[in-house]
Length: 162
Image (cartoon, rainbow, N blue to C red; front, side):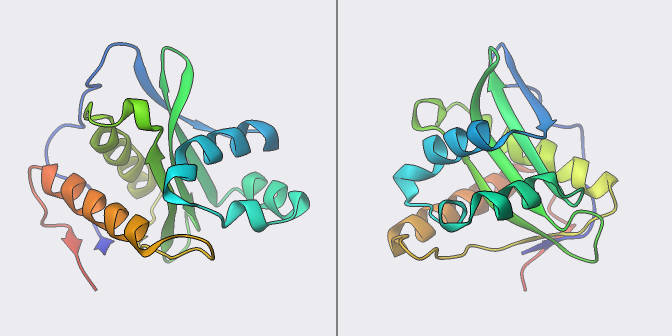
C-alpha cells in the first residue's frame, strides 16, 4: 500500500483521556521492552535477531522514526518507520500491547504517525513482512488491522495498493 497525500479532514483526536503520541529516540532497553510487549503475541522477531550495535545504529538514524503511544505516560504502542525523508519509507513495526487494543488507539496512532511522515516529505509504503519465526496467522491479523485502520479514514484518495 502506498499513501501519497495526507488524509482528508482533521487528525483523529485521542480516543481516551491521557493518550498522546510522541516521536521518541528510545534507548535500547526501552525500545526492546516495548517491542517485546507489542510484538510477542504476533511473534515479531526481526529486531530481536539484530546485534545490539546494529539496532542502536538503526534507532539513532535520522531516517528512523519511532512514534510511541503513551497512555498516562506508559508506553503502550509503537509505530516505526525506516527511510523517512527518502524516496520511500517503510512502516516496519506497528501495534499496541493487548490490553490497549479495541479502544480506537490503533487508528489514532497510525493517523498521527502517517501525517508526521508526510510532513517530513516521505511517501509511506506499507508492507506486511513475515519475520523468521512469525506465524502466517499473525501476518493475516496485521494486514486486516491495517486495512481496517485505513478504512477508518474519512477519505482514501491518497491511498493506493500496489
